[in-house]
Structure formats: C-alpha cells, structure tokens
Amino acid sequence: MKPEKQKTSFTKAKRTRTPARAQHAKAAASPSGANSRRNLRKTAPKKGKSNTVPTAEELTREFLKTPAMVEHARMLDQVQASRDTGNQTVTVTVANPYAVMLEFVERHHAAAAGRAPEPLAKLVQEIVENELEDTLHWLAVAPGHFQQYRDLWNAFCDERGAPQHKIGVEEPAPEGPF
Image (cartoon, rainbow, N blue to C red; front, top):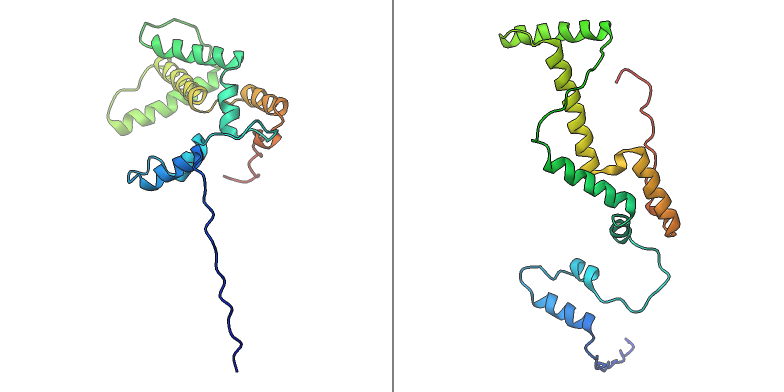
C-alpha cells in the first residue's frame, strides 16, 4: 500500500515594489532587450556602500581620470587633430648593412610589381611612418601594450585593493623556429 502524499500549501508573500524590482518588471516587458538583465545589473541602484572590490569597469573609469591618463588623452586628441598639418623634417642615419638590405628587398618588390625601385629615403620614411602609426594605434586602443601604462595601471589597482585586475607581463615566446 502506498503512503498518502501530504499536500503542502504555499501562500504567496506580498512583495513591495522596490526600484530594482520595478526595473526588472520593465525589463520583462521590453521587447527590444534594451533593459536586459545584464544591463540592469550595471544600472541597478546600489544598496549602501560596501567594502567590495571594485569591478574592472569601475577601476577603468577612475583610472582614466588620473592626471597621467588625462594627459594621455590630450596628447591623442592633439595628434588626431593635427595629423594633416604638415611634416617635420628629421635626419635618420641607417647603418650600411640595413641600407643594402632595404635596397635589395625593394629591388625585388619593384621587379615583381613591374615598377622602378623607390629611393632609400622614401623607404625609410615609410618604415618610420608605419611604426609611428602602429604606436599611435596601440596608445589609442590599448595603452597597456606599453610597459609604462601597465605599471601605472598595476599600481592603481594595488592602491584600490584590486590586485586581481592587474595586467600580467606576457610570457616570452618559446624557443624554436617560429
């Protein structure tokens, strides 16, 4: 004979509507997904100050307000605003073996393309400009690519008690042909 199951009754407790619950209710009704749960977590009101570790996003917002990063942003703005304002002439000395190498490579590239080789000065100018463009790119999109900015960020994370957000040093590539 089977034992009889007891029926359990649950009464629904009445919940009061808090700002966070109102946002969740709004999110459920939003067909666009603009008020998704992930977005609500970012914008949900915080319940008092706690001694929790700041998120990477919070740290980044604070870090960008430091004097070093404000100066960094000004420099980037200045470079972007004045990129087409002319050139400055500088003299670059290239060791003979590198000059021979560049001319050799250019002769082969020019022959393959069916054109005359470019002069050495133009080749060096293109190399320097490409390197500067690459540097500008990394300064704009990922300053942590440079050791000085990694050091600034890591010191900032230590000051804020968030060592888990520090940027590690890349491990050297393994020895081998590639």
